[in-house]
Length: 278
Length: 174
Image 1 (cartoon, rainbow over the protein chains, first blue to last red):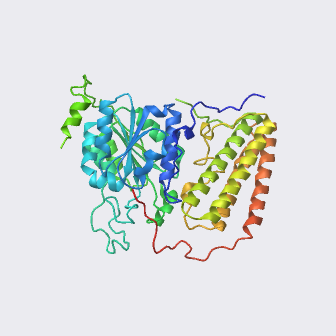
Image 2: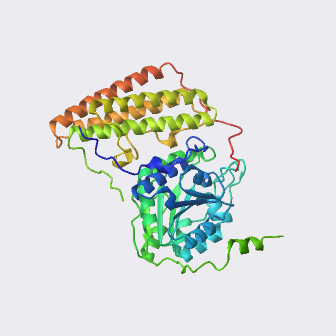
Image 3: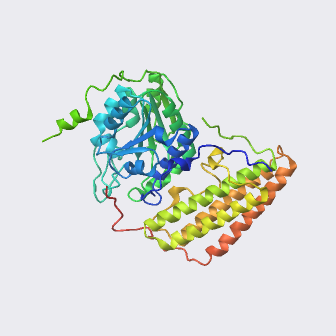
C-alpha cells in the first residue's frame, strides 16, 4: 500500500529547537510558537532563512525555542534590531516578536516608527495585557478598571489601541489572531510574511497565571470578524466598532517597503571594533 | 507553499491518514505537556501525560502497522473543523497546579471530540459506504476510550475549590 497522502517535506517540528519552553502551563505563547512553526512549514522556508528577534519578557523567550537564527535583545528594542537586520540582510525573513509591555511601553516609540518606515518584516505581539514576567503589573493594554494586588485602584489610564496606532502610523498589514486557534493564526502569519512591508499581528495570548479570567477569551473571540481591506478609511471604521475580540486581517496595503540600496561595506570590522576601544 | 488538504476523505485510506495524523498529534502534544509539567514540578500530572502520550503513540503505531505505512503524515497537512486535531489538548486548558483529575478530564474531552469527528463522517451520506463503515468502527473505538478514561477518572477525587490559588505565583528570570 502506498504511503498516506498529506506527507510534506517541511513539518512544523523542523522549526522548533531542542530547548523546551518554560512558560507556565496554559500560557498562550505556546500557541504562537506552534503557529509560527506551522506558518514557516507552509511557506517551506528553511530555518536558516529566518531570523526571529525579540526584546524582553515571557514571550520574548521565543527565539530560543525555534531552530531559526535568533536574537534575544534588550527591553523594547526588538524592532530597531530587526529593522537593522532586515536592511543589512534583505534575503532573510525577519520575524520580530515580543509582548505588550515590551512593544507598546518601552518600545512604543519604535513601534510607531517601524510602522511608518515600512521595512519588510513581520512583528508579532503576544498581548496578555499584563507584565507576566515581573508578576502582574498593568501594561499599556491593560483595561482601565482592571484591579489587582499591584494596582488596587486600576490604572486610571486609557488603554493603548495597537491596531488603531498601527493603521494611523502606516503599517502595511494589520491583523489580530488568537493563540487558541494556532491553525488560524498560522494562516495570518503566512499572509503577514508574504505581504511586503511592515506587517503587524496583534495576538491575544492569555496569561493564565496573572490574568486567569483571560481563559474565557476562547468563548469571546470572533474568528473571521474583521474583513480585510486595502482602504485605510474602511479599516479605520472597523476599528471604531471593534471591541478587541474580532479576529482576522484588518488591513493589507500595497505601500512599497523601505529598503535602501546595499552598497559595499564602507568600514571593516576592525574599524568598527576600534570605535569601541576605551 | 505547501497546500493543506481541506477536503473530506474520499477513501478509507484517506480516512486512515487522518486518523494516523490525529493520533500522532495527540501523542506529541501529551509528551510536550508532560515535559512542561515536569518543568513546573508537577510530577504526578507529568507522569500521567507521559502515559497518555504512550497510549496515543500505540494507537498511531497500530494504524501504521495496519496500513503498512512507515511514517505518520503531518497533522498540519489537513484542515480540521476544530482549531487543531480533534484529539489534541489545547495548551490553554492547562494550569501548573492542575491535578490528575483535571488531566483525565482533558483526556476524556479529547476522546469525546475524536468520537464526534468519526461519527460525523459515519453519518455523512455523501461519503462512500466503505469509508463510513471504517469511520463508524473508529467512532466506536473512541467511545470505548471515553469509557476507559471515565473508569480511570473515578479513581481520582475531584479537587477542592481553590485548588488553583497560589499566594506566590511563578515569575521568570531573563
